[in-house]
Amino acid sequence: MGGTVVIGTGISATAYLASLSHRLEVSKILGQQDLWHRLSPDHAMGQPAHLLTGNVVPPPQNSNLPGENAAFMLAGAFARFLDGQLTNYGGVRIADSVVDRITRQAKNGYIVKYIVHGQRGEVTCDRVVIATGPGPSRPLMVEDSGKLGVDVSNASKLIVKGVDFLEEGWQYPDGGHCQGKHVAVYGGSATAAWVVEMAYLRQMVVASWFTRPGDGADKWNGEKRFAQAFPPGGRNIEVGKRSSGVRRVRQLVGVTEQSGRLVLEFQDEGGRCTEAVDLLVYALGAGHTEHAGVSAMLDESIKKALVPYYDRNFAISTAPAILAVGTSDGSLMIVGSAMSSTAGFNFGDQVVPGYKEDLMVKLANYSSISKSLPPAAAPPEGIALVMASIEALNHTLPATGTEFASYRGKDGPGMHATKAAWTINFNTSNRTQIAAYLTAACGLPPATVNLAAALIVRVRSQANYVRGLTDKQVQALIRLAVASAAATGDDLRDRQYSQDDFINRWIDRLFSHAGTISLLEKDAIHVPPALARM
Ligand SMILES: Cc1cc2nc3c(=O)[nH]c(=O)nc-3n(C[C@H](O)[C@H](O)[C@H](O)COP(=O)(O)OP(=O)(O)OC[C@H]3O[C@@H](n4cnc5c(N)ncnc54)[C@H](O)[C@@H]3O)c2cc1C
Image (cartoon, rainbow, N blue to C red; front, side, top):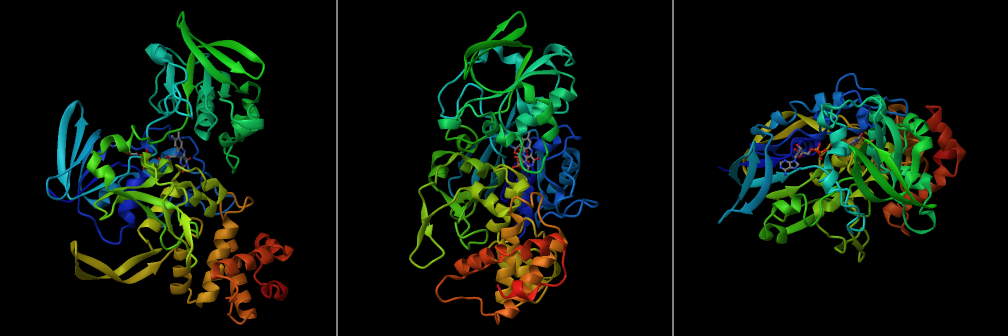
C-alpha cells in the first residue's frame, strides 16, 4: 500500500494537511483521541478563537471578533470545531491505535507498526506525517536536570498525572468520592493552575499547590516560580486568588503511603516538613526526549537522515526558527507542537545563512516564534505556534481557491487555483502572509506593504495587546503605513541599513510619539501629518 500515513488526530495533523498546497493521498490516520476530546468541555482555554485557528482552518461560526474583549474559547467548542476536520483529507482512521515503530522499506517508503486493543498491526506507505503532540508527560521522579528525584512507583494509585485528572471521565481511585478529599498539586504551569481549578470544581480541598525551587537569587521567589501559571490575559486570576494561601515553593524529597494516605516530605526555604494528603496530582509539562516519544519510534537509519526545516524565507522573523524536523525529501515529517521539544532531537548548533549577506546565524528555537504573536498566544506547545509554524513551513497564503485548473506534477496529477478569495487572520499570520494579502487584496505598493506588515507584527506582540488586535486597530496601522509611505515619497529604504533594520528604526521612532498609541486606542480614521512624517 502507498499513500501517506498520518500519526496523530489533533490540531497539528489537521493544520499540516490543510496547509499543503497539494493534496496528499492519505491512506491511514493512526492515533487515539487528541487532547481536546479528552478534557472537560466547559473549561475556558487560554485564548480566544482567532488565536486558535490561524488561516488554514476557518474559525468556528459565531466566534468573537478579534481583540482585547474576545472571550476565551471553551475546550468543548474547540473539540467540536476539530470534529470532522481530518476526514476532509480521506484515509481510514484506526481509532485507539498507538504507533511504536517506524522503519524503512527495502526500497522506498516506510513500515509503520502499531498496537490497537492489544492486537498488532502494520501498514506500508510512501510518506509519514508525525503529529503526535507535545510528547509524554514528564515523570514525577525525574527533575529538570534529568536527575532522578523521588521514586513514587510504590504509591502509584494516589499519584495522578495532571492531564489524566483533567479528563472529563476521570474517577477517584477505587471508586472513592472527590468531595472533601485533600489534594496536593505539583507544578508551576498553566496546566497546574487548571488542575487546581478542577480540584475546586470537584469540591476537593487544595491543601498545597507547590512547585520546585529555581536557580540563583530568585530560587524561592513564589511570584517568579509560579509566573507561568498565570499567563497574560487574566485566564487564571480567580484560581490564583483562591489558592494564594496554599501556594509554596518547595522541593518534594519523599513520598510514602500510610493508611491509605500519602505523606509528602518537603525541603523548603525554612527546612524540612511533612504533609499528609489523600491525592497528589502532578503537572510538570511534557516533552519528547532522546529516549521517549517520537525518537523512540524511529529506527536508527531514519533518525540519521533527519534534518531541521527552518524559516528559510524569514517569513516569521530574521532569526530563522526551526519549524519542523523531517527527511530531506519530505517523505517523513514531524510537525506541530512536538517541535516545542524539537521532537527530542538537537539541532541547536546548526548554523544557516542569515538575512544579511555574509551573515551566518544559529537556528532559533521553535518557541521564539511566540515573540511575533500576541502575548496570550505564547505557550510553546500551544496552538497559535502550531498554526504559525506549519503555515510558514508550507508557505501557506491566506487565500482560498475559488477556480481551479488541473496539472501533472512530480507527485502525479493535481489541481491548482487560478482564482482565489483572500481572507486573513492578522493576529497569527507571518509578515510574508500579511504582505501577500495587502498586495493582492488591497493593491498597496511594496514599501507600504512592508511597513504595514512589520507594524502589525510589532504592535500585536506588545504587552498591551494580550489577545491581539481588533480589525479597526489593524486598519489604523495600515492607514499609518500608507500615510508614512506617501509622506516619505514611498522611498523607505535607506541605503545605510538593510530594509529590516530601516523599518525597525522607523517603528521605534513612531512609537516614541504618543500619537501612535492614541491612533490605535481611539480607532482614529485620520493619521496626523506629524505622525506620517516620522
Ligand atoms: C492541560 C493542557 C491544557 C492546554 N491548554 C492549551 C490552551 O489553552 N491553548 C493552547 O494553545 N494550547 C494548550 N495546550 C497545549 C496543547 O499542546 C495544544 O492545545 C494542542 O492540543 C496540541 O495539538 P496536537 O495536535 O499537537 O497534540 P494533541 O492534541 O496532544 O494530539 C496528539 C495526537 O497524537 C496522537 N499520538 C501521540 N502519540 C502517539 C503514538 N505513539 N501513536 C499514535 N498516535 C499518537 C494522540 O493520540 C493524538 O491523537 C494545553 C495542553 C495541556 C496538556
